[in-house]
Length: 166
Image 1 (spheres, rainbow, N blue to C red):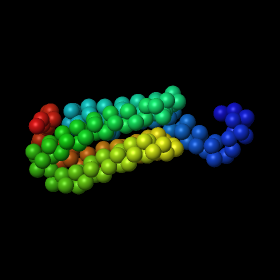
Image 2: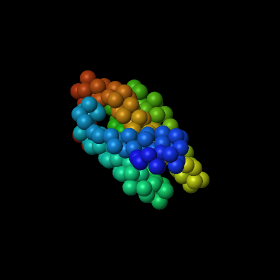
Image 3: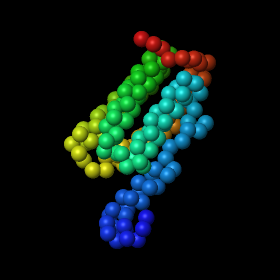
Image 4: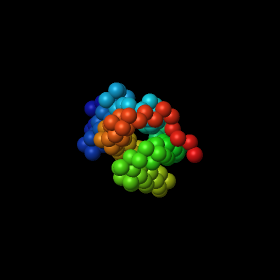
């Protein structure tokens, strides 16, 4: 960022710009540490990460205002479908922490609704808040909660090969 930009916008804008630049430059990548050991779940998690990265690229391109709502809606729809498939799998195999997973999933969807509402009301910096929330929540949820059911299924000798439809 040029010195002229820093001087013109002042220190608060510099902090926001620097945060956004850092956030977008090293956003979110899949690696094997995120694998829960169920291939279709891992594939869906990768798709969620790709949608988050798409949102980051939209922001980086400067089209945040125009595209943020549409990308967030696509992410919400895909996430609802993913959560439904996960919950059906857990239910079919009597996963003991299904209730907690449902609460976590519902809270996530509600947070996406809040962000959508903020966008429609024209609030500033929604995109930055969305990206920060998505990256932290998804990574922590996969590494903690989803790993638990991966381990549970492995210990029970269960290997769900595909999502349960219905």
